[in-house]
Length: 355
Image (cartoon, rainbow, N blue to C red; front, side):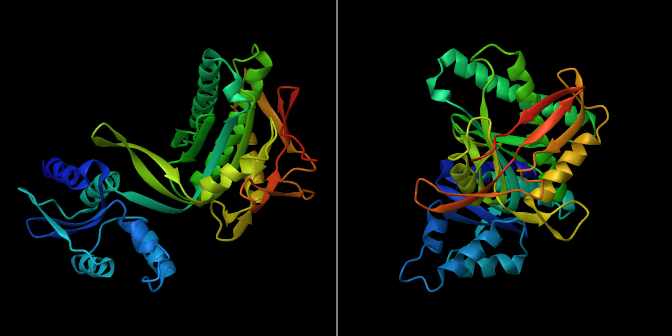
């Protein structure tokens, strides 16, 4: 009952998206929250003359929006003083419990009325080639085919004990896709999912009529982003969309990806059960090995029996860095990926070598 009353009050504070709820703390008879206008954080981190250290302000905000929004009673007043705002008090008829489950539940409520920052997450981008040139019915068929490939990959991996809690938002011509879970395992699981979606799409194209299964160009990167809850009518939802360094990088990478091409950003991060930073190529080899270890994995009624990267591909020692200027004139670097997947005894080549 206290959570229902709390959500009703948070919705009033949110004001249809006019305000953001940044954090909360326990207080006798209720909770304290920090609520600011939606434009406040942009102003607080803007490089204006009157701002003494905008980079420090941006780092402070990123830290505030990362992880749990639960703060100590003294801490929330310190944060309020730094931001130059005052905490709001929410009186509840029944004081909420101070246990881990309740804190998590309140956190999830607050995040729906806020913006979150994630320092590191893997994100994939699937883009349908020449999408705008197809008839509306063909566009619908292609988006449905891509959605099916994602659902099929999810189902296959789940049967093998790998559950990818994936989310997606449309780009118009395709989807950004990410794992809702965070950490080394979710990041590499998304890469395994990404490769399996591409294989499933390629198999479907072999069997399809023209215009029903999309030709894809795709990209994969790992980086930071902000996450916002989507609004439906007057309510925020449990669904969200992301924007930040990782999506910006993917959007610039995809510009140079040819039809059927696969480009990766260059990144370093930890693989599961390792504290050492690993490269993009290490991630690719880990995901490839994970797929091949799944003895029951079948695609198009054929079992995946082998998967090898081309000698020019990321994942191999002869990988070549692609350099190009994006549409803004900024210099970008990418790695091209190509591999041969063997289904039963039938080889299937994916990826395009950049000349």
